Length: 270
Image 1 (cartoon, rainbow, N blue to C red):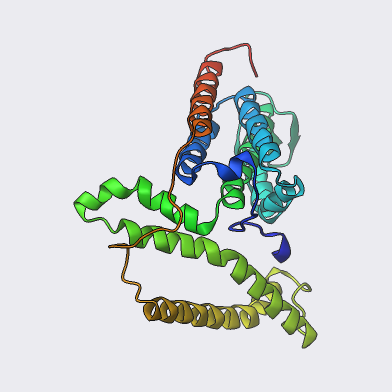
Image 2 (cartoon, rainbow, N blue to C red; image 1 turned 120 degrees about the horizontal axis):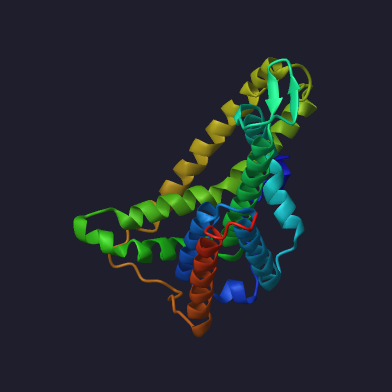
């Protein structure tokens, strides 16, 4: 399970998605979220899912990465589905036993929420898969640049967000090493009830926190040794430039958003 966490990883490539302006990709990702939460029917969600699958094909990212991005959140998905099944009421129950009643509305809502969560995670993962942390930092800073007029720490916020995203794979790898070391010493991390398993995590969390603080201190020292003093006067090796494909992608995304909004008002569609 630990090795399957791919959030924050970057896979270099030369595809159309990789070459797009990182600012445009960030805006497209936000519009994609708007599409998912605007869709009120399965047809609208299907449009979003087909679009993100097409983007994965363009990016040449292996489809196995979609499954790896979904696997860590399976417990959350199952919990969400169970809540909707048990607590969403309707007119006529399909199944009734003791205090448990399952309605068609609950089944529909559970399936709808599962598809929305899957599409959300897969879409967010594609952004980090095809955008390096440095380019992502520059994109966030450029988009939030107008807030500098009200003395908002745009550069510092962008740097913190990107560093946190960048260190997710590192912490996952460190957790896997600590768990392997504890198992080699005879620790039983996968046996017992939920309380025993939670107690067994203490020998993992303590060295993980120590390692995380150590890495943070080393990073701060390295930045100070390189005379880092924030974004003032800082130059960039790579400049961000938009291309015709970026404007085409934005137009397509707005067309999809408009299509999903229209579909919400068509009563015959599921």
